[in-house]
Image (tube, rainbow, N blue to C red; front, side):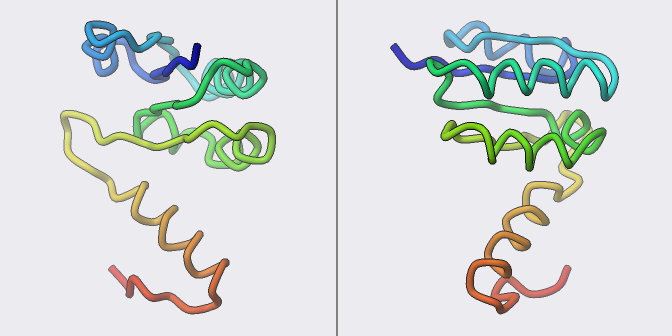
Length: 106
C-alpha cells in the first residue's frame, strides 16, 4: 500500500498525522537530508510533503530525491506564509523542459 510522508518542523506537520500521513519531524539541514533520502529509498512512499523552511535548508537534497524516487515531492507553505519556494521550483522545471520561462518573473 502506498503511503504519504510529511517532513519538516514538528509543529508544522503534526496535523497531517490526523489524515494518515506519516509525520517525520526534523531539525536542521543534516537531519532533513537523512530523512528525505530514507523516504526516497522506501518503495511504499508515493507522496512526500516538505515544509518550505526545511526545503530551503538543502535544495540540493530535493534534486537528489527526485533523481532517486518516483514519488511526488512537493513543498508546503508554513503558518508564516509562502516564501514562493514551490513556485520557483516549478518555474525552473518548466523553463528547463521547454526552454522558455512561461510563468514570468516574480
